[in-house]
Each structure stands twice: as C-alpha cells, then as structure tokens.
Amino acid sequence: MRNFLLFSFVLISSFSVFAQDDIMNLLDETTEKPKNEPVLETFKTTRVINAQSTETVPKNAMDFRITHRFGNIGAASGGGFSSFYGMDNVANIRIAFEYGILENWMVGVGRSKTLGNIDAFTKWRFLTQSTNNKIPLSLAVYLNAAISPIKRELFYADVPVHKNNILHRLSYTAQLIIARKFGNIGSLELLPTYVHRNYVKTYVNPENGAGETNGLFALGAAARIKLTKRSSLLVEYFYTFSEFRKNNPTRPYYQPVSIGYEIETGGHVFHINFSNAVGIIENDFIPNSPDTWNLGGFKWGFNISRVFNF
View 1 (cartoon, helix red, strand yellow):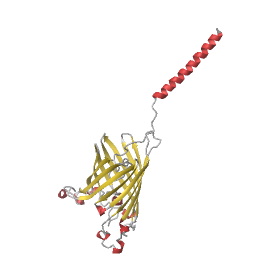
View 2: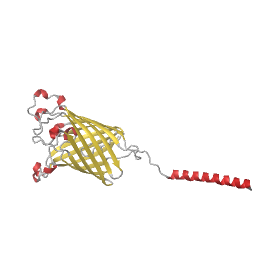
View 3: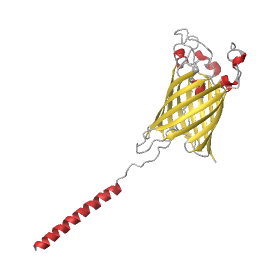
View 4: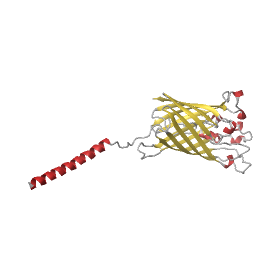
C-alpha cells in the first residue's frame, strides 16, 4: 500500500507538471507576438507638400508628378478679385518624373518655371520603422542638383558678364529626413537641410550688417493627420538660419509655411494646398520666400501624383 501510494503520488505529480507545461505551451501559441514588419505608408507620396517625405517610388515604377502654384490671393500682395484671387496668375509649375531603382532607392528629374530650374535628384531610405518598435523611426537622405538655363544678368543687372558662366547657375541640396508614423493617427517628420548656391549677390542687411551667403542651413517639420480612410490634413514649416534674412527691410523674407488637404483616388494622390512659398524645389523656396501670410501673400495650388508600374 505504501508503494502504491508513493507510485500514485509520483504519477499525479508528473501528470501535473506535464499538464502545466501543456497549458503554458497553449498560452504561448494563442498569444500574438508583435511582428517585426516594416511600417507602410508613413506618407502617401514622395512629398508632403513642398517637403520631401521618407517615401520612395516602388522598384520598377515611375511616378509622374505635376505641381502647380497660382498667384497670391490677397489684394495687398497683388491678388484680390481683379486677378480672381490669384487664379489668373501662375507663380510656378513643375513637372517631374521619379523612378524606383530599388524598393528604397529612387532617382528623378524635374523642371520648374521659376528660374527655369532643371533638377536631378536621388533619395535613399536606409532605415524603415518597424511594427514592433524595435526600429522606431524611418530615415532617408535626399540629394539634388539644379541648374538654371537663364542668364543671370536677366535677374541681376549689375552682375558682370564674366560672372555669368555655367558654374554660377548651379545649386544643391542635401537633406536628412527623420519620420515616424503614429498608427492610424498620422505621421510626423523633421528635415535638417543644407542648400548651397554657387553664386549669390553680395547684398547686406542694413539692419544688422549681415551679408548674403552661398550656403544656408534650414530645419523643416511636416505632419500628416488622418481625417478619413482616404484623406488627410498636411502641414509643413521651414525655418532658415540666416542673419541676412532677419527683419531685412530691403529684401523681406518670411519662413515658408504650407497647409494642404490630401485625397487618394485609386491610382492618383491629389493635394490641394496653400503656401506663401513661390518655389517648389528646396534650392528655390528655402532661400527665397518674400511673401507673408499676414498680407495675403499665400497662393493656392495642387499636386498630382500618378504611379505607373513596369
């Protein structure tokens, strides 16, 4: 009897241990573990409004983009009813083609009305946010070079002819893009930026004595706030670090601010936006922003993106 009781105790204890192991295994199987997958669609297109996003064109796909800016809306800035609030004027137009070489690397070319700038660019997303937050951010680098085919003396009458060589028409941008998506709420990004222009006029701010510089640092911020499944609110702002541009009475400068509404319609992504920036590429709107929202110096425009797969 004693042996039987001992055997029974051992048997029950063993069964209990095995049963506990089975229950724990079952719990492990039914409990979902966070998957390590890349976060998709931090932004809908490769640009927010003017600002670059961390998105790139998919491999072997081409994005055809049209960006249009009308004239100033406010009468104090040349708009008003006489120009149908800027719609009779065209401040800028840009047509661009962007092609995905790899899933996270794209190249492209574009042409803008302002200064006739022809630009070539590349963007590489070298880090992508993961769903389990082991990678909390997406990081991308953007580089471009632009050339103006228009002779500089058309803009600066006092520039000597010998200054008007092709190297003086070149400008460049280098940018780091830091972004994070917050579930279905929206996305936020920061854009440390450097713009270099090979030639600038030696203007001086009479208020503080600061002169114009070839290189400019700027910090941009952009946000996308989801409104519905297919629409979002877009906001962006750039601050340019330049003593020459601070309270300059002879060459006024205002930080570029833009707001827009984004709609996804099948293969198209359509943006309606308002901005005080005339330029569309960084080489243009970061150094040059003479209009202010306070005087109605903002323009309405639109961006259209259509992706073709090959």
